[in-house]
Amino acid sequence: MSGHLFIVAAPSGAGKSTLVNALLAREPGIVLSISHTTRAPRPGDVDGVQYHFIDRATFKRMVANGDFLEHADVFGNCYGTSRGAVEPILKAGRDVLLEIDWQGAEQVRRAMPECVSIFILPPSRAELERRLRTRATDSEATIEKRLAASREEISHAHAFDCIVVNDHFDDAVAALQAIVHAARACRALPTERHPDLIEQLLAV
Image (cartoon, rainbow, N blue to C red; front, side, top):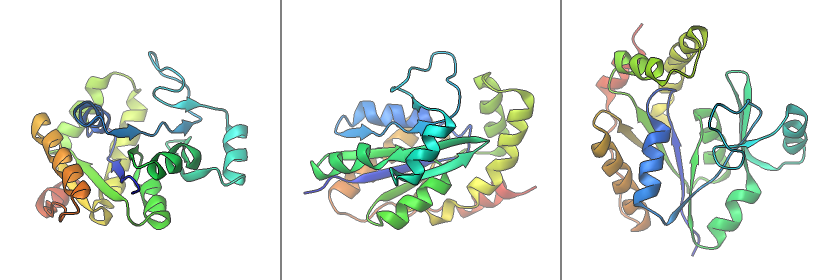
């Protein structure tokens, strides 16, 4: 039996990576797919751990060859998920998680409609901004760009199978685990859509 493919997307600052790392620690049966990117490594980044870091020429060549299951340009950098890194693991019966943006998620849903897609929401715009600023990895201009882009990203939350609010961390991780367990057991996925919160997050 093939493994399950899980997609997790979120606006910058929603805490996606921290949640995904906690989920992987609690659910060792899930393999995280490492994306390729043209962005420069940040301090502490290790090639092949956070990302496979490649140049634009190599990325374009991989796109032309059809090597990516999905790819997107995000804040001027290219990101992509290699087919060769995902399909063999699924065929071997293991679950795979993709930590990607909404554009990539859209492509994967078209290519593999059986996937389970999850969107992470922050509890408020104020908290989203606070988290972006406390990361201390981006310039003021980049933070403003990410905040502006967050509305566009959040407007696509309705297209995902499940929505999780990252307010209380342990609760959010438990919600992710519940989705994984439901998918594995072929049970109905959680249906809470948080329309009021989404409306607040999209308000200008």
